[in-house]
Image 1 (spheres, rainbow, N blue to C red):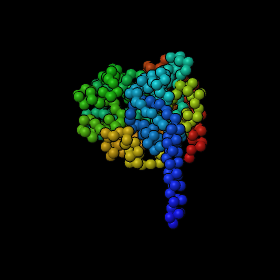
Image 2 (cartoon, rainbow, N blue to C red):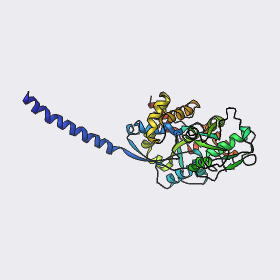
Image 3 (tube, rainbow, N blue to C red):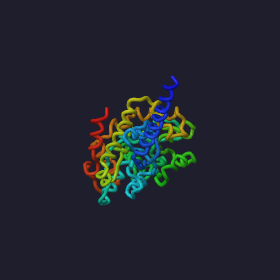
Image 4 (tube, helix red, strand yellow):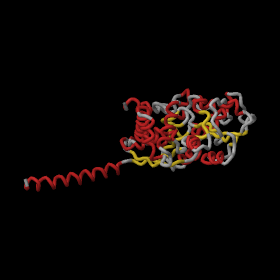
Length: 335
């Protein structure tokens, strides 16, 4: 037995060393992708699930995530080479294309298909009607941004002129709107999650309506990269899209509580129960796309809303700034 032990111990040690070196090697082999997200929100749950569940590592990449705090800032990071991939509203890509940029962004995967914001009032309104907003003051979003344009579109759909029938505040930073409302500004504010639910839980506001439900299906948030980057790195774009699709599948196959646990590291200051409540709210209104495919009809509807808001100089055909090549391959190969 002593002879056997003398023989086995070196082999076991060697195996451990090789395994350790192999692990280090695999980590070093991961390609770092600089991803700039428009904001940090539970609205993008499948995006965080893809990271936390290791789907990007499975596809050979490591995500270096930064938050732009606005679609304009995310696009600036992409155009200046500070980011490889941008995650924001398609309107930012449309604006850049219409500026005549030679190397413009191409959208290759879609994540959300509805607005993710909620109208927060000062007290619960179980019988809320949009028409009741006439004469009120609303804290909105950045002019030209999809959240603000969707809000204006919904108001018009209910016979309200957003700049005559209500007082619209649009000069605040995205991160300052909730604080301004809590401080006494306005009668209502449009907020993304978890901000809206946190305000409600703390008794500082009450969610009265969903812009996602009221606004209907729309190409809302998607991934894009410069055309030159996609041309040079098709394998990276394909693997990235694969990881996103895995995240989408995982979200559709798991409970709100399981999703909340998966994304909690990205929201350390948010209670797990509150996270689950928000996830459930988004799931119930069909917020997340079932796959990364860009749907031309919802892209066209986005441009309808942009035109209605007076923010679109020229419509852009969907096929000029989007591609479903990578999404189709992901759907075909990943089950």
